[in-house]
Image (cartoon, rainbow, N blue to C red; front, side, top):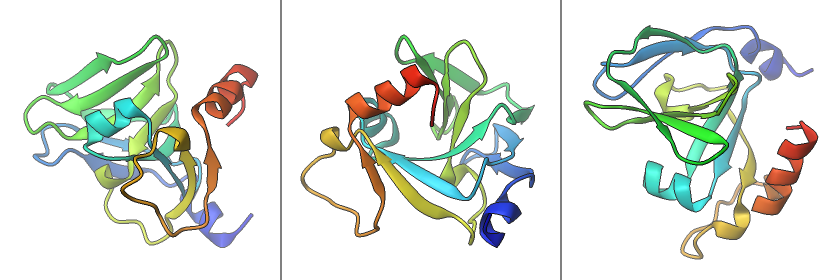
Length: 148
């Protein structure tokens, strides 16, 4: 385990929306950041969604303005009703959160590791980072196998 990974694990980080009406904290699984290019994330986040896997560690401190939207049969998305900030997506029926990288303060240990739904990425941009790239079919296959 690298120093960066061990530093990220176990550290509870504060997060919030743009206006501060929704505040929470979470413990990232590691320093990895994944990007989702699916059509839903593109519309929801006005581009790709940069997510940090936090499993079931999300604890809300202030959530009166948190809205949960059931975006599919398998996921819900959370956002602030006041400022509209995209905050997380979560697997429905269980606490398995992927929190927006930008909800946290900037993290110097963050690594851009994965791109999912690469087959839905618009042709007008491409990231230069060397990432693992998965199609939508590969992502659903991983979920079916219970891996990530």
